[in-house]
Length: 130
Image 1: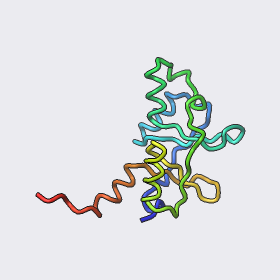
Image 2: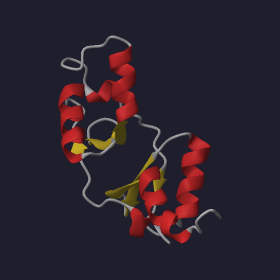
Image 3: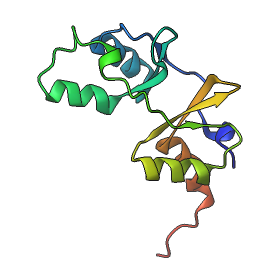
Image 4: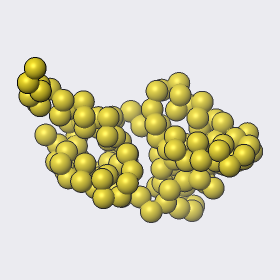
């Protein structure tokens, strides 16, 4: 199975000036764990995850004043829609992250998460013997 078969194609994109509160509100409303941060004048394409927001709040930072750009991961590993789920899972395990932005011709077309991969693999796995 390929990344294109598992990825979410409805991608939340935000700008670097969004507050962490706004980003988390949008993420919660969509029940997703990551947003693509598009900054054409700066970092380009980055990712803001629930973990980034949690770390900021845990440090006592104010989510109403903290901006996405200060917490965005910019050294992103991107996946291609034609990657296998094994390749995506290997990249996530190697990098220690749970989301991959999927690029096609340099444009974000989806996000694949560990949860998406498990959802695809679970029916394929044999149940444990009773």
